[in-house]
Image (cartoon, rainbow, N blue to C red; front, side, top):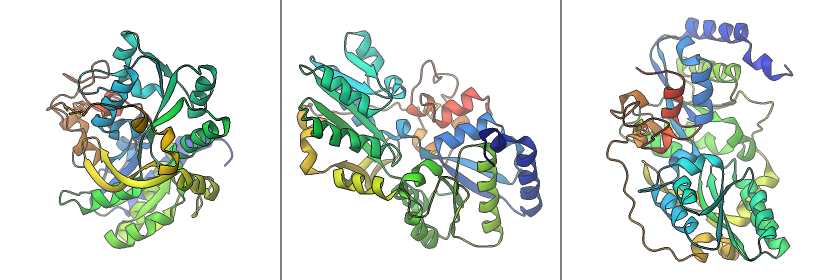
Length: 362
Ligand code: SF4
């Protein structure tokens, strides 16, 4: 197949679902890691097409959702400072911090700009030498290459007014955390194709082996996801647990080696706080000491921050596949996309937003 609409062909999806119905003999719980896949599943009604015994739960792969409240509050503190241009992807502007969001800082006069690439932020720094320009570098492995490129570009240009506020997270430690939890329900994973485009899928092999779970790398179109579910269920039904690739048009076992090389040149592993989940050892990336001059946390002195999370929000349990958005007492009442209490209701990849937008109300 060559064109995107072929991956949305309802007849082909139906054939895959029919095969799933034939081979499924018991209840299976499968987690799609990525929020982009969650939205695709809801948008195309895949969850409603599947055999009743296949239960999909929604993983932590939404960068906006898992950026810690403490880091959001740090972003708000930096963005409030005079002489700062704070740049970010658009989704982050509405994510609630403890008391405010970036939109409200902008409404009260802060210079906050939406960019589509960290390299746009580097250009803003070039054009505004009298200002400090900060880019909010959040995300999984997918966004890391562009973020490290921005640091290397700023260094090459000799810019001393550009820095990153880094809150990077990685998928494999999150999978370990989910699978080793006493509350775990996940029996198989759909791994995120864009993350694996960068990192390959070699890191998942020991996870599949250790926890005896099938992991299938897949994409974001309905046929990709249906095929990924079919391959996962085939493994579950035959008691196999290997890593398979349902997205070979994009993903290779080794991934993008040059991208991995520059990531590790600029970033090093570190413990990371995940919103709603907590601190996961060695689950993030931070700038190496050699690049400390580009670290906004190092550049700006920020008073100690004590974040205050909504008592109602159960996003942490949703992101670990323990609960569904409709099990939250605030879903669709106190918490809506217009008035979100948690990041999973804000983000275009958030599970709560997907349930609300596509009408999964029970
Ligand atoms: S519906 Fe709102 S309050 Fe409930 S878990 Fe989702 S984001 Fe949090």
